[in-house]
Length: 229
Image (cartoon, rainbow, N blue to C red; front, side, top):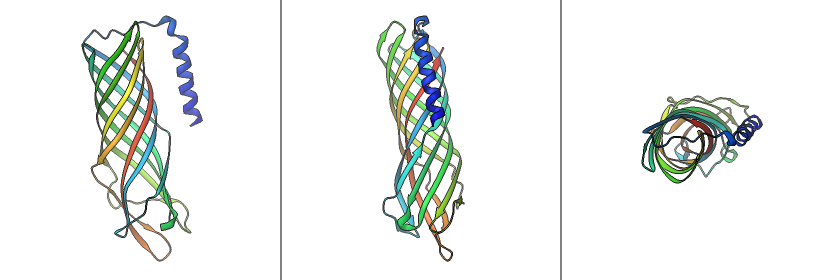
């Protein structure tokens, strides 16, 4: 986390030092292209958790910062644009409910993202632009690994009943600014739903194996820095 924060601070400092040499981004042409890199803070929403078919009371969760990045294609028309992105992100989360023997479930996942965003230029002054944007995003989780620890047992790999790979569907809203060709955005992604829930077995003690089903959404708050041509 310290390393990520240092990189972001250095990037922002670099942006401030080159402002005097800024060349205006040409938004009157039909297409702009770009890249963006950033960090995201996952916000875990446990929507349904059952243990052997019985609903479990609300569990606690926490998360760590993850990385994200994408390629940008923007189609401009007057003060509006449609922005298509293709990229990926990672997230790290933790779920625990000691009352039911689930001390800790650590999860790391990687996903491919395809957002389609509508944007509006709310202000333009020289090389400075500010935009509002919103739209849907489809994410495909292609690699998810988890470790679980239960009462009396140390952390070990979690084995899912079926592949945890799944699609997630999001609604995105945010604010972006362009300083010349440099691009900064803040966005929030709300998970509308997933294509399937997670199912796995876990040994809560030496004599009992329990079936766990988990419906989980991972919302995201992110900041990114990029470059547009």
